[in-house]
Image: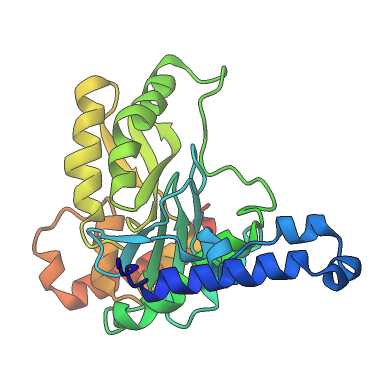
Length: 292
């Protein structure tokens, strides 16, 4: 006499569930209370509600950047696709619900959106990324699961090419868009064209590049060399900074950070002479209101 193979726990549960459903469907009293098509549409084994929303459990990768205070979060789906947006302060995040939520996390200094990534910069090196990551992960996942628009108001991230640009400016913008910006975006940042005058290209750094210790090296050794190689009219590259940014660097981040911002400093020993550097920076403060 053949012995039927013993069913595992999962198979036994499935068989029991099927029998219960068939018995319920054949019960005339039950059928009268509820239409038959509702029984057919019901699942035998309903999945947990959390599994119906795969976005809530999407896999977010992180990538280090040259700036130790910035971390690149890659959600695995488009963020801004073909453009970027920088949010250096909470006030600048008025047009993005996600950026506003990220700023609510204690320790977040700035937020940057790339085509397929989000760069978050913390306030100081003393803050541990292991303490910030869980809140950042949860905020990003919850937002994408909500289906809300990433940006509620269009704000251009940079200056695109226009018909009014002369040939040199058009070449500078094209080279930035095709060769330079993609490389900078891989490091969680971006570079925006702000002007060209007297052979000097004004560029604004965003994202992880804003407070990166090697930002000046990136400008001079990387971007400037490439622009000069392809465009002989370019004599140099300078970092574009708003008045508030320069004042912040002088007052709060230390005087030594201001040396690369002063083009007239030619004395190589000035950086080691604190009194001389102090005098230069104090002389520089009165012209801050005239900076755009």
